[in-house]
Image: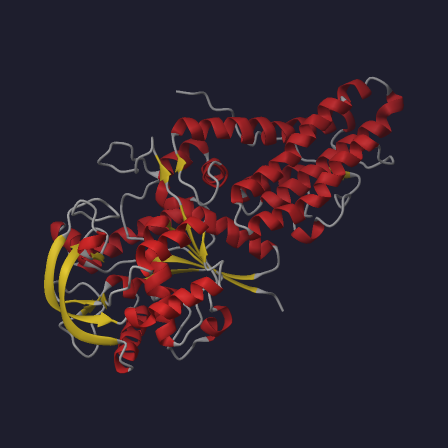
Amino acid sequence: MNKKYYITTPIYYPSANFHIGHCYTTIIADAIARYKRLSGYDVFFLTGTDEHGQKIQKKAEESNVSPQEYVDKIVENAKDLWKSLDISYDKFIRTTDKEHVEVVQKIFKKLYDQGDIYKGEYKGKYCTPCESFWTETQLIDGKCPDCGREVNEVSEEAYFFKLSKYQDRLVDYIENHPNFIQPQSRKNEMINNFIKPGLEDLCVSRTSFNWGVPVSFDDKHVVYVWLDALSNYITALGYLTKDDTLFKKYWPADLHIVGKEIVRFHTIIWPIMLMALGLELPKQVYGHGWLVINGGKISKSLGNYKDPRDYIKEYGVDAVRYFALREVPFGNDGNFSEDLLINRTNSDLANILGNLVNRTIGMSIKYFNGIVSNKEEKEDIDNDLINYAVKLKNKVDTNMDNLEISVALDNIFELFRKCNKYIDDTMPWVLYKDPNNYDRLSTILYNLIESIRIGAVLLQPFLPSTANKIFFQINTKQVAFDTLTKFGLYENNNHLNNPEVLFQRINMK
């Protein structure tokens, strides 16, 4: 039986203005999901949209439409963007889905019935854009510590969730599961800044607006949007429904990938909800950094926003995916600019990979009419390349297990760099001048094609379109991970297809 792997991104606020920073989480999650699938895992990859809350209701009112009409119109934008980026999710959940709403109501009622939710009155600070409650001491200069905007004084009847009841249990869990919150810097932040100073009971309903999941036994109230949103990770699997097959199969989640700004919700509120429900906690929550421009956030108001599909149209989907996956060590903040995207495309994709594939196929066609034959015993110079190639899969496995995405790609591209050096060292164009060297020349080209094949097999999760183009050009069906166990599985005497440029060099504007 295949191993199971459940990976999620956060569900996104539906927007007509997604930027490259929004894509970062989903591209990373997609690469991990694809890698696990190719490694033999039974993967369930979840993403979706978070469609309730006060800010949605305000936007709808400004547009003179109902909130449902508003989200219906723009949620397709998210789906189109993920399609443009080759995102291979297994389910797209919307918090307005009938099944999700019904289960959220059941969860709220269950927590209320067992005494973990109680009615009271909320007085305090609320940030509408972040949908976040804050205490006075958590504010920075009187403003929201996440977005820096003004907060509102709120006073209304509300239900509260007993976070404080579970504080010691949560601390104990985190201490006994060192990989639960990663990277370490996020773990330290959650413990020192939020948990140890003392958890206050959380306001989990609102009465000042009505665009949300109604509390089933008190319809004046709607469920706090974060309680609603976080539940998606189990409602998507059929928790508390007649058919909970997926829930039994995939829960607990192996990995929640989230931006650093929402780690607090996923490592405090969410695990306490699960504890109260008597459910296992996810194995890991990883809070990554942001893609920023010149050290600042990407936004229309700052004049640095561009629709990601514009980059895809101009440079290709795999150039955009490669930048997101390769440029920034996962977990850190990273700078994004069009110049950096162009430089990375030119240096790695065009010069290292594209040039290698093009000239290797070109030489094979010129010297042997495109027939690739392995004719001689290997020499020391061959073995240096071969040894790296056959060990590469294990190295990349380790990188991916540690979520070292950029390192994994660098190790794959090291194989391509070694191939280019191998060409320079063996000088096929010199060997071609003497027919006595043709067997040696044929073997060198075979070694290159086989190394390119191995690299392309490993490249599939990251650059699926490019990998498929390489497979077509070298005319192989040996594209599964289980073909990486030894060197020499490329079909002997196989005929290559004509070379085509994988990546054009881009001129700086």
